[in-house]
Amino acid sequence: MAEFLGKGIQLIAYYLPQFYPIDFNDRYWGKGYTEWTATAAAKPLFKGHYQPHIPADLGFYNLLMPEVRLAQAEMARQYGIDGFCYWHYWFGNGRTIMEKPFQAVLESGEPDFPFCLAWANHDWHNPRTGEIILKQDYPGREDHIAHFNSLLPAFKDPRYITVGGKPVFLLFAPPFIPDLNDYLDLWNQLAREHGLPGIFFIGSSQSDGRIKEYEQSRLDAIATIHLEDFLLHRPAWKYRLKALSGHSTLKTATYAEAAAYFITETEKKENVIPTVIAGWDHSPRSGKKALILSDYTPESFRKHLADAFSCVSMKHNKLCLVKSWNEWAEGNYLEPDLKNGLAFLETLRECKEKWQQG
Image (cartoon, rainbow, N blue to C red):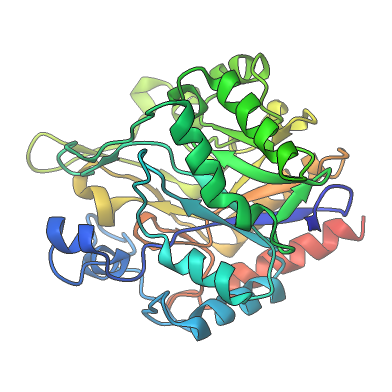
């Protein structure tokens, strides 16, 4: 197994599999829709707004092509990413979506690159209308068992990321799971029955208010995401809300302004895993309802990385999550684009090497 604890700073990047046509998107959004459709169609919403974001070295790839997945892993490894955390979808009663890229990784044995899974246990909404388009259900114990069994081959794969020998499994929204501790206990029991020491459960939290609640559960660790914390620290009269046509507003800030609050005192705790945020511009999905962090530069990213790495360097648990490798329609990616090329990846590698050397 790919043991990650006690080996210096380890960066695990979230990986979105929505870059190939699927039946649901064909029916709901139109034939041939993928994440590239929204990404390439984005328009600038104010003066100086950088859109659209167009991929460079890897192009408009299709994740069903094995050479694409190999190229991504080689690039990630070269620039300091230690593993991918693939978003995984299980809506209950065996309903899955966008599973083909990861299944191909699992079945082919390639790329030879560490990975883990994150259960995106939430409803799918149309980001512009709020309509629920895919409902997340929790049918109960038998469904939890079926879900575990579907993932057991992945948990036993030698590339699977472990902590203390336990496969890492991230939960997007732990409070959504009815009887959370019962679910955690069940999966740990099933893991032991199949020769594993258990599951290392990480709960994702987007507010510090959840930390105490999570610590009272049987989660092993908490991954924090402080994307919008800057709004809590900015007096209302200073909010730069750009009023646009219609009844919506666009929330904007500079990346540097927001990033000042990405790493807090909370991340110094051993059971808390910080999240590095690689840019943010949700306008390709949300339009005029988006949050946009402007003026995202390698220099501002470098400062954020220094904050994160200086925090984890003082801990035994030096895991960091990176949001994200390839969330293109959120403006949240490390893959090279036509504007910046490899600049952000080069910055990541330089900063990580500096902090690894002490």
